[in-house]
Length: 341
Ligand SMILES: Nc1ncnc2c1ncn2[C@@H]1O[C@H](COP(=O)(O)OP(=O)(O)OP(=O)(O)O)[C@@H](O)[C@H]1O
Ligand SMILES: [Mg+2]
Image 1 (cartoon, rainbow, N blue to C red):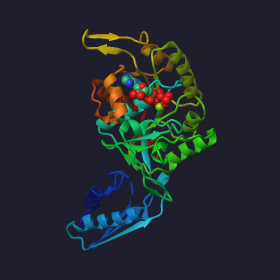
Image 2 (image 1 turned 90 degrees about the vertical axis):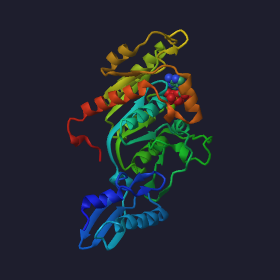
Image 3 (image 1 turned 60 degrees about the vertical axis):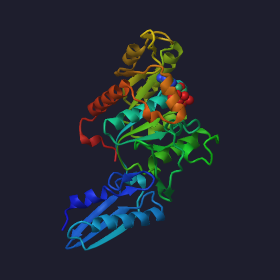
Image 4 (image 1 turned 180 degrees about the vertical axis):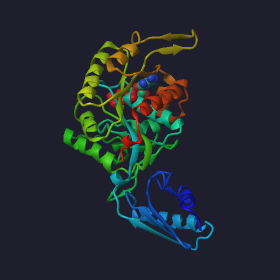
């Protein structure tokens, strides 16, 4: 007879269609009972279409049947909702009072950096009227789902993505909604997406300090916020508002990231501070949080974003950012009790 561990190991090889993560990583295995030579497996049906359920049932039977000592496998589904299944350890929102400073870029690089550190990562694009995450990752696959929820789409490196842009009939369609509807969409993305087990969910916020950031701060169990800014004086002034908002809402600021900090010109081996002197240290002091990184203006990076190939970006700052993020979040986790199940 196989052990529970052996059965779970087999189930970890069964990939959920669309997400390309296993039944175990999507946290869909609810119960495994082994008696005599029979194995009974109960899976959660959350966000799975009937077609997907049938497929998973067959695959599950196949792999478990192969285990030594197994004569019979019974796979059944139990009704469940994504929000009861999801287990997300850290939820990080990327924020700035200002538009166009590179929030979405930093959100994407944050997710990529954490993925490269070996973490399971997802991105919730909370910018409902101006979503830009799928474009940077070159993704336009429509998510699948059922009445109970929706499956995220997996990027090439295995980051789970959910964005309104993936749901629109055409990615060029505009979403013209008022605040309450936008808030509802964000809440639905949180509650009705089957994220499964994730180490990190990165939330990309729209600019400003209005409805959407407010919804995210009020409804999502945020571990903390990363503030993005550029060295321009106007930006830093607006960013202070975002810092104040986070404070008023009682949400910790995990760190600050200065984007477009400088331009490196290899021909003369010099860093040119195009937008003025770095304000990294100053903003870190204002936020009472560490400076997690200073990103240069990098034409190669802009090109990769435009081409939908941001995951190909390979610069030292990504490794540094990943290490800093692991440090600041593990410092927040004083015990396992902060797990947002
Ligand atoms: N460090 C950088 N190097 C090169 N290009 C950059 C850099 N930062 C941002 N960009 C480019 O600037 C554009 C705006 O960035 P991004 O979409 O991340 O800003 P945002 O703050 O999310 O904007 P919005 O307020 O509209 O949500 C993008 O097309 C991106 O490719
Ligand atoms: Mg953006």
